[in-house]
Length: 396
Image: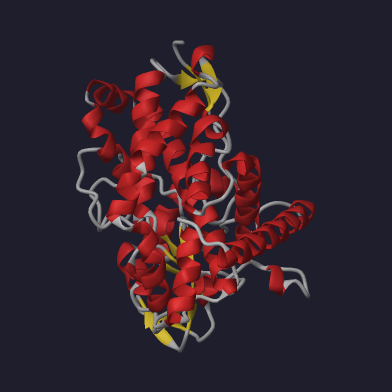
């Protein structure tokens, strides 16, 4: 049976899970006519993500940029595109910014940001959740971690969106060109900030990374900029879409929503099940380093492999009744935040922000419901899954 996997198909992006089931059943290691390999079973995805000597992260190393502009590509030196031992050394440095103590100290500030955002719409009885809360809250926190001026929040949101477009080949040619202009603008901005922090370090993550660079000779200026771009994109988009996907899942399952309203202590369960059930990051790319075999299929050197995290998280062999949104299930081992040496650096922060945002939504938006009868459109994205907009109404 012929199976077609086209991650850029709008219908697939709207709801990929039926296609994932078909792939796992009929072609778990799927060769696309264009040459890439789609890997859909949990065990195969885990094997790829935990074998960097055979499946390189270089495939994630940067966006396509116009000729002559590679020096302005902020993803070029990013941690996400590195393999051991370089990745290990870089990760050991940037981990300093994400210790449990550092993340725990952010909770009061996250509450303050949520309060500030709710003050803008709470009395109106309606909001577009993504632009009102789900996007600006994590963008603000990432900006503050990096020591950037949060008054530029709209710029950071624009840059993060452009990083998503550029890295996922989303949109038409004109949109991609505009995206690249925004990405270069962000790169120039970050290079200026990096140089300023080099001269006058502060108590922020960029200063910490620059200090580590001088101390250990690990991070180049390009790598500092690359990490900032990764943090802005992955750090904000993951949390933004986690929140949006969780709210949609609760609305689609009113009996679960009612349980969580009565018992907010279940919210961490909602976060974990959402990461499994409707993963904000749907796939990661890897490059085959040498001829190898996966799931009985021969893979040639330099083949592009798409590890379908969203499919692996719905694998019947790993999770019982996987298409059911079940906040009582054991979600241990889900791949919603990646796996292996590239497991999401900001996972604790994403979970904390998701938990606090859902607590506020349930407490401050009584009886919230969709404010439209139209289907909720998803991002046109290869990597990211979440609502493009989520209009809600609630009791003011």
